[in-house]
Length: 148
Image 1 (tube, rainbow, N blue to C red):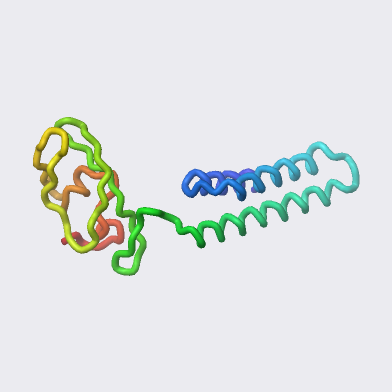
Image 2: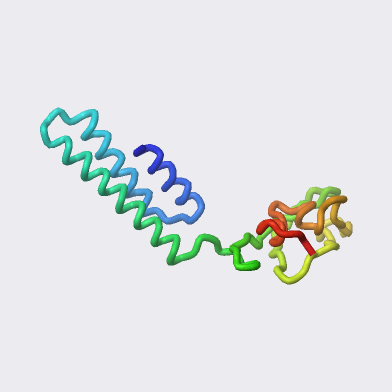
């Protein structure tokens, strides 16, 4: 369970770059490990409890950091749900990649590659160029509704 907690906080660190909860969690994990495996005294129980309290503090700190600073710098609200708006469009002809911000009020049916000037159109079955060539699907698809 300790390892799962540390892994969860590490994943959050990779996404949000808040170092202090990760530092507290790793330190607490080491304290728990030393109390459980290395300490032969009667006080080893206190080390385990101190380590668990440290994991609790790291989790609370991580929660509040994510709540205060937001979970995503490129997210927006679409139909009351949070969606990722940044998508990397990859040109199928030349392989050129460009980060674009998706609109929430319209679909893009055409996109011109900046490198080779090819006009991209949605593939059959897709509603827009983001669904066909983007790294992230368009906002309506992300929330589970039909696109345009």
